[in-house]
Image 1: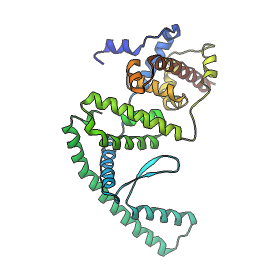
Image 2: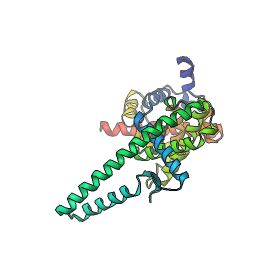
Image 3: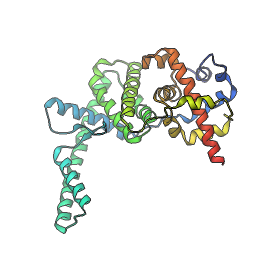
Image 4: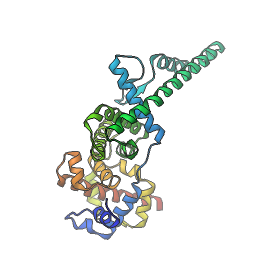
Length: 148
Length: 155
């Protein structure tokens, strides 16, 4: 878009239907344009997506371990933590579902949760390191992610 | 851009995040083939729309599929003024979510991304006439639904 006038002209796309030239329809178009501001994801989240993608791809090429791209039963896909964390999450969820809250189990869960947290923090550190490298590689190819 | 496009097409925050992850993964794989901002922007929009519409089709609930019924009544009455605009801003995601897929995609690309029908046509690989028709019908349907929503508020 080069300027406000050109933008205004472009916003009223030409169509042969006279209804589209109705002033009320034009007013509606303008209201729609105003309402359709981009919803931006947080910069950190965006950066993390990119880092996760690189990490997943690197691990995939190496043939296993690390983050995995998992297909869900509803067709969606998520990046999963390394296997031990995924297993622990399932175990904790199962215990909660059954309502079994024996002291020993609670303590064990706490220990597992702390271990999972440590693993997650380690994974986050890895993503931070890979992010800088990925950005650098993309910028060398003329791609500036901040502008995308 | 990527997340916003995915959110407006899928209508769900979590799904949009998954789509955005997918797109960035694909970006990483395809980075060598891309050159310059325009190329990247075109590529990102195209892949995001494809991924988002795929996700939309996998969702259990489908968008409004009886567009013609609404269209038939569209000329019967209507205000189309500032009141409808207010409803539109307040309930945009919900109203967009009720549009059939092709209309929704065209409307989002036109009014969020400010793309011209010719450019949308290239991005979607559809004839310009199809894009214009989807835009026109989508706009009418959106306006009609906004009017009805406004009347429900007033009642």
